[in-house]
Length: 631
Ligand code: MSP
Image (cartoon, rainbow, N blue to C red):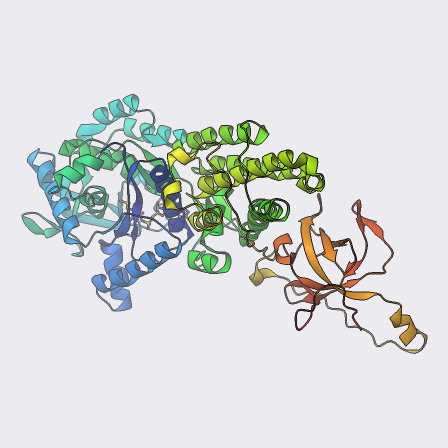
């Protein structure tokens, strides 16, 4: 195999339902998997569920069902969510599968034959929610340092793994592989921990039975972390499918959250050393999400359900937000308001607007056809720099930086449109070549942006690709160079990619103060002649774009039946995107005194009312066309 790239998420516990934390690890790993596939690697992307252990057994008992039933139920929820989030995993491993049980027992036997497993007696504190034994000095005020709950005192016969033997070898490995744990700060913590001395590890339990039996002594079940970590081998067909195993192992990267780093960066490498297997190339530990500044917890009722976010905003915007908002590796805070903010600013305004204005202009001024022109130009050099930077950042799992680069290119293209003003070039037949070159550079930028966003926003990329006449085969390394857009290609106008959302989440929109209209009396009443002076007409919006430096205003070109479209500035940007408005029929007050609003001249007013979620435009029951008198 030329470029194998094996990457994994942790396997998720089935005593909890999927929340944003799990979605985060999975989306990040998926984005990396998709990027590596596009770059031509042989990717094997694994996720799955961790189904054994006392926690699951207890949880099932509380619900009056068997652990197996509980697992089956929750696994279905994970699998559905991953589908909804367009996760492209190549396998899904469940620790209750036979293939997994065989691998775990095999690994156990090998380590045992090596003399690294012995039977002893264990007495210590045990934190059931975390499935971890704790020593006196690890407790914080008598409680578990991770979850803050009181541990139980446990004394039992137990098998031990001679982890103490591997401290020096592990330190040596860390020295030789400085990139093994990322980010660096976390690596240093782990090295300190190993330097403090490794103790032998208890790796079996007799106090419950929901687990994989120890070979030769079924009174014991295998410790859930020895069981769970082995999933990374069992999914490759270890030990029976040597060919496949050798093709992909060692894993290129295990993506995990910071809370489970020690298991992956200390326990797992020492198990593998004992079994004589190569160690993974990297463990990347990301940070944790809080919600509106607080730790997520069921009791606080602030657990973010990824399913609800997807239904509200779509999978791609949610994926984009998770990876853009917070540097991968650091902690971050989730708020729906921030998600809506990014949706409107980055997706509707920057990305969506670029696609619609470029394809609209191509159709309006060039009959929808691209004319291939020479190399060079500012967009080309910018795009080439961005391609290189994105590759570097994806190599470091710095998704936020990769996205920042891509948006740098999108914004450069938006500015290029403003500066080159294709609408002016189009007026002068002598500048046709210039116009063609500008449009070629813009559409070529759209093509590259489509490829670059595809790992994070696969569905949007598919839509954009269809528009640009690209198929699946075009998502590959060779296409990631400037100048691959064919001459004469016909491109239709883009439908709006991301219709704008309300600024605030629906759930927290404060009630609007609605002032009741007063009934006019006496001299306030309007005569029919006075009303007749109003030039109210139907209009069709032909162009719409944001007014720079204003959140509220859009500059519209409205066809009101006059020879030239009329420019109107409307304060509707909080409720409508420019894309929503183009083609829309509106009511226009045409004989309003022209005024300058934010430096832009406005010759008329569009009628709207205060609706449920913002402004709602006044319209017609049927399509009437431009320039009809409203009476
Ligand atoms: N079953 C173990 C992993 C075994 S891997 C061999 C486990 N499961 S878990 O379901 O509790 O957690 C899975 C992942 O979700 C972890 O990487 C964890 O860091 C991540 N997250 C859980 N809550 C999180 C947040 N609030 N924020 C970000 N990630 C979080 O541990």
